[in-house]
Length: 103
Image 1 (cartoon, rainbow, N blue to C red):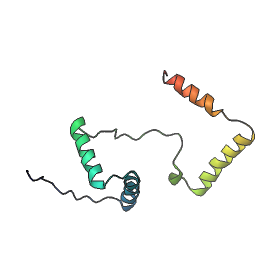
Image 2 (image 1 turned 180 degrees about the vertical axis):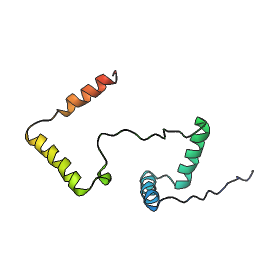
Image 3 (image 1 turned 90 degrees about the vertical axis):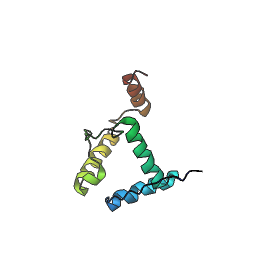
Image 4 (image 1 turned 60 degrees about the vertical axis):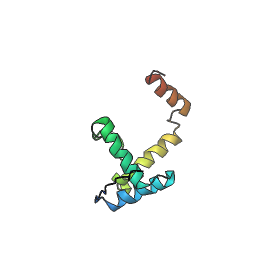
């Protein structure tokens, strides 16, 4: 039987990114080495990075991008809309989304 050749990869990343990613990998039972190997294989199969490296346009900032005052203002608007019954039925929203996708 031929010996399997391996190579080591050393990379420095933000500790929070590492912690959060490894928590997700742990939940799905995927060792980090397997995830890295899969990523490298996808790079080979795609002839480049296997996902878009653009900054998506967002109309709403993520919670960690807002200060407490901004978040409280946004929640107040949502609460006022809910109290005024200024909302959409969830089934109608999904029907509209599906229609827009040609489903």
